[in-house]
Amino acid sequence: MKKIALLAFAAGLGFAFAGGVDNKTNLNQGYMRNPSRNTETLRPEAVFYNIGGTAFMNDGLYFELGNQFVLKNYADKLDGQKFEDDENVYFYPNAEVVYKKDNWAAFFGFGVFGGGGTLDYSDGTGLTSLALKQGMASAVKAKVTAAVMAGKLPLAQSQAYAQKLLEQLSSHSLEVYSVQLGEILGASYKINDMVSVAAAGRFMHGEQNITLKCDGLKSVNGGSSKIGYESNGYGFGGIFGVHIKPWNTLDVGIQYQTITKLKYKYDDLTGAYASSFLNADEGDNFKNDLPAVLNLGVGYTFFDKLNASMSFNYYFNKQATIESPIDRSEYDYDDSWEIALGADYRLNEQLSFGTGFSYGKQGAKSDVNNVFSPVLDNFVIGAGVEYSPVKLVTISGSAMYCKYFSEDYKKAGYTMELSKDVVMLALGVTVKPF
Image 1 (cartoon, helix red, strand yellow):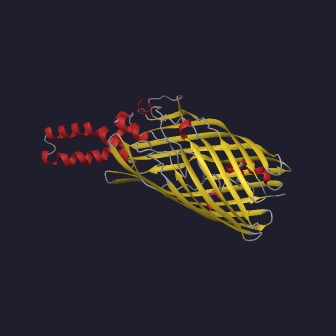
Image 2: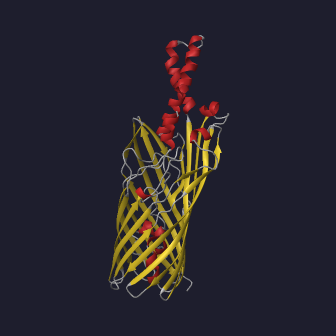
Image 3: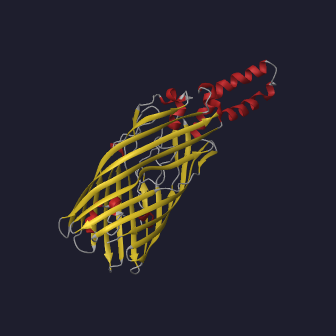
């Protein structure tokens, strides 16, 4: 069973909407409204997408809170049988604080940079099902043969009984939780009316948990039907940005996020068989780095009301070490990229609208992908509204539809069709006391 099981479990655990293999682009509710964010200079969300732009914000103190609601369906299909996760995510928060004075700005941000929630496969996945059936086949065969030899089971019924018994013993559920939270702290400086520079540090702390429940495992798992692990990891990286404003209506944003090296430690193993299955003990480590990212953007403002922009993100997946939590083997993802176009229109002092779309080319291969959370090329479109009931408060609401293109994933002689559908909704509020 272990060979196939390794393939089933050994996947990076990226959820929600990922621009790269695991890097998140939906860091703020503003991304739902308009996915082209890399020239932001008006809102606190610049903390996530264009830190150099904070130096061009209006003077004052900004507080922003937001939350996303991720409605998702992840699926894999093997031999005509479909395995699905429909566990929605209702708490996906972000927070930003910016203080801008003259040529300086200081800022803080909190958000979900990787992972993002729970996957609940009530019938497991295609590969976990295959692993359990193959692992239990010999035991079922021996039990059926003994029943036939003892005269307790007619030979003509043995095949049907064996299949029924195998289905019962391999029936299982799988729950996966993964999240990488981060805090950004930094500052920016406007050198002159055309150029600003910025730097920030980002502290990351991640958690990964997996629990597989199968009654058929009791005989090899100390009488327990559960096997799994809990792990935590920490890392630190840097963010550097430059914002260029050749003239008042043109914005160019350049930002580089360094690789964040994350080393996870197994804090707790569940089940007597867990140590053997994982080839690890409590206290051992595995790596799951968050790749470096280059963010580029250009935007132009027409008639002081309409801002149109284009953003490009490139993810250096090959630089990162992403290991299987099972056997510490490395995944060989290619680099990935996405391009976005969008516009924001201010109708008046109280009301503005935004919309945009993006296309993402992921770094998965036919034999390198994620059974739990498929890494798929995608097209997304979003729209939203911002409303200021009073001068110092802005309320925002937005929605985004993500169209993923299903792909075949080939492993150990088997082919699985991976697919997913995601709709995201978001709410946010910005307060500027002065």
